Length: 95
Image (spheres, rainbow, N blue to C red):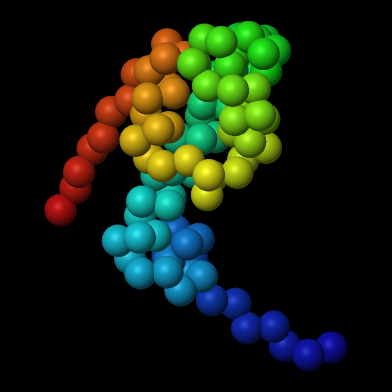
């Protein structure tokens, strides 16, 4: 059996995939916010139609959100949708 070389993760899968560090951080924030938003909508037990009405977007847009199509949502849009869903976002910056 061949030896497998393991490389430790940086903690950001996008950085590990070779994206620029700044871009990788934005992508990480987008995916984390999308996951939280999707969990929140499921906890509310809203149908996609109900969620679309409350978030002021189309039902197909909610479908993309629920499927995790993070590339279709900017960080700004995800923050806006989270606010419309009754969530509160905060950002912590560390040096």
